[in-house]
Image (cartoon, rainbow, N blue to C red):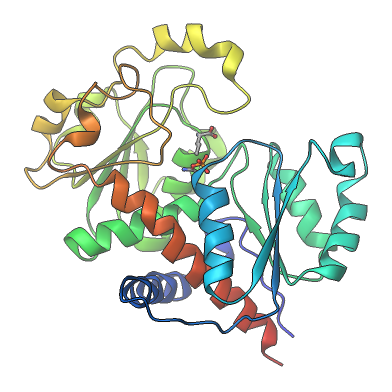
Length: 305
Ligand code: CP
Ligand code: NVA
């Protein structure tokens, strides 16, 4: 039995990631043509949430159900996790009853500790440091609209946060160039920039990042857990809005993505989600298909002897 986890993109090889993206497109076709595909009847996914979610919760729960299984929503507000039961004890108990687990939490060490005590595959559904599931959907979306992302130029505009870190790893795994524009003091952590200097670089301004980009991506200025920094961040990020003028600097077919939820008037202009090159709704839908492909991959790996 090969126990595989998906805590960051680096847990899979580039070839495995490619397979998941093409499988996601096949599963999307099946779903759109109303064909039933239920290889995981009786399998149960645990969904541990210590932060809020719309897309992640709906896509995992619907996806597992479409694959023939079911999902249990476990909020830290009403499980013993929220009352201090150690993550290691929770991992041993939960993984003895379920077939696969996803976790959305704060510190990245929490998913690592859970995984090291888990008997079943663990998926990172967002930590303070990474959001790898979103990258599966983003890459699938790029591929569907523009073909391979290898060799392309991607501009990350805004906070050097969990999404940005996963974009840095994605640049390495899929072979694209990432230009990052963040206000001073909000750049990604040095350890990511050093390790991935061959594919990711910080540039001086949002405009510098946007020039010649094939994809422009942004995210909220204050992530979950940083709500009290909202006001100070609004000032710091004022020159880092993705808007129609910024899109003009990029290639004419440059796509725009945002993992959502979006704050109009802050990281994006009022009508940016309606821009002709915005693909945010496909991107959101692809969470479903990409994660179904991921669940299938991890469960099949585990069935291998
Ligand atoms: N993009 C994303 O992860 O959305 P949710 O926070 O709604 O799950
Ligand atoms: N960076 C954001 C992403 C939300 C999907 C956050 O962590 O809140």
